Length: 73
Image 1: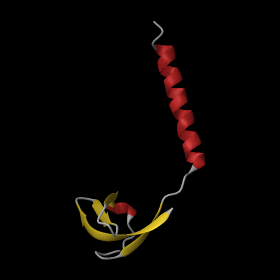
Image 2: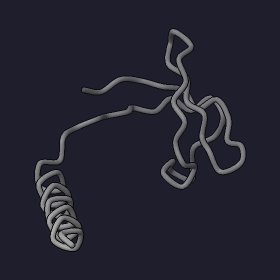
Image 3: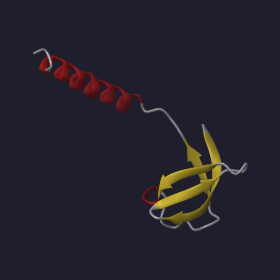
């Protein structure tokens, strides 16, 4: 899924992006290309990352297991 948002401003380390209906999206300013200025239109894209999702789920399961084993008393 991709859509356009306009860089409204950068303040306190956050980029404020606005869509055409005025909804805001706050993004760390470090994630915005350095050449972007107020008024720059950005193509924003969200896509699933199945490899990272699986890795995080695995780490969470391992942490839960470790905590359950530790609390057995």
